[in-house]
Length: 439
Image (cartoon, rainbow, N blue to C red; front, side, top):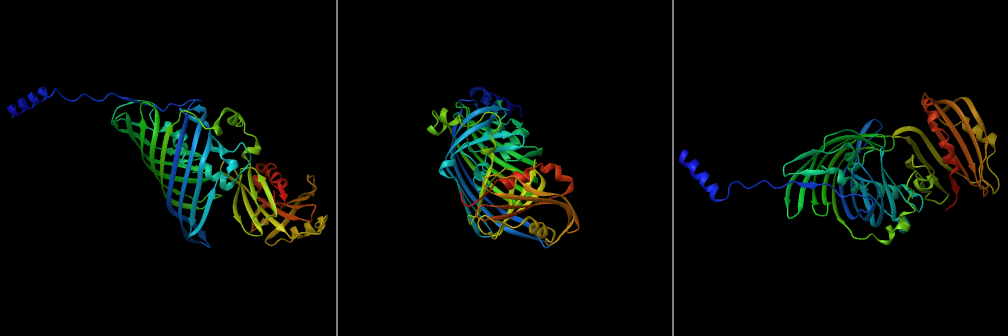
């Protein structure tokens, strides 16, 4: 045995001894106001939506594909990652099929400049050109956020085999969560070859999005250009289960995101100084964060606060729910009524009688009623009352909005007595934002 050990030692000596360990590489993304990158993101998602109908659990198959391409200019940095960026999209399209019914979303030419801002409540995207529709907002907010990639790295020198914990801040950005409850995503350096470091990110996380709890697992692989200080690619695989929330059904999905990314020497004209000067540095004006909605039949348009979410729509009704930091506050039902003659509308007394006799509504006390001042030649009447719906105590505010051409809309806002203060006049703002006809 001693002879074999001696022979092995001699062989190592002739070969120059054990190979030295590779030097650590600095796995730090270069970020700053001058940083500019081009990203291409492809999404492939499959799963199912879960419902409870008449006490029975039902499901509907879900498939989605999306393609996004944009150049991104960093405007501000926090936690080692861009916290505010301007994006000039050249591609933005998503197709989803639920139970075989297909829906396609695209971004119009006049909304191709998008500001993306990380906040403690999640990602906020808006267009300096004006309000986005809910579909457009989802299209630019719900794809993989490249702002997170620097946070997936250790931000320090690392050797092959080293591991590190991904921060909750980076997890929130990468997983598109409104809040992180628990996370154990871990990064690992696998290899360094020809100036390119390969790393992985794996683990699980729990969080909340739009008031719904999310449990997810991640398996991802990325590449990092050491000289450029830039993550150049990622394949991000995510499985998540979402409980039913106030504005979304429960779901189980598996998604694969492919990110290709590179630093660019110059930004396009769409991201020149004059263009990004339109992006506010501080508080974002309400007109930029508002959401626009157009009735499919052209009877009215609505530009409302982002906290209102559409949860149902028919030819006759639009149902929206108000969330406050993910918590359900109130529900509003907008109904287009049969028009009256031009210059006329239902009499206040008839409206009050119709409210008191509404099916399923047991009115116990009128809290306030009367006309409300409104612009644009419109007329508005409001009645607030206590009562019960399905034996549950509720406070409802009923609005009748009329236009100069005889157009009429009824809006009913329902809220529990405990949440009345939380509405804080936002229901009136919603009603006043209704404009009759196409805009």
